[in-house]
Image (cartoon, rainbow, N blue to C red; front, side, top):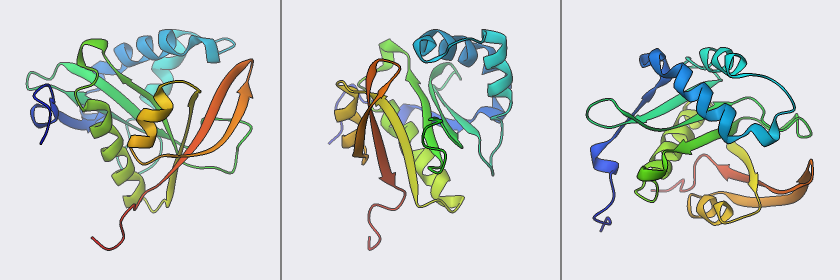
Length: 171
């Protein structure tokens, strides 16, 4: 049974390409949320990067979670590479974000499900991500990601995780 605070039956997950007007919002959030991992750049640069993710059938792809009024609840991207020290690993879950007032309601998990399904549809066997070594690691494990290694990323302790696109072959 789903929690009463679960919004997953009241949201829709769509391609950013269907909501291009949201690109500046995503760019600003991304720039502010993950600035510590960026040595330089600007919000305008992030606008350009999100404009490149308006694909449906090739990477990079961004998905947005919306309510019934098309208000933005969160987003996530499937990109070629998110860690320069691991150039052979592809694709990557990147920039998973849900607005604070909508967290712990299943939205991030739904975004991950849609992203994993699209990666599988595109022929990928695995999806990778990295995150700070904190409580988010448990969240990702609950969503099927397995810890691969811990590493230092410019002084911050991080964890590399991997998820198979097909968790149950014999459903």
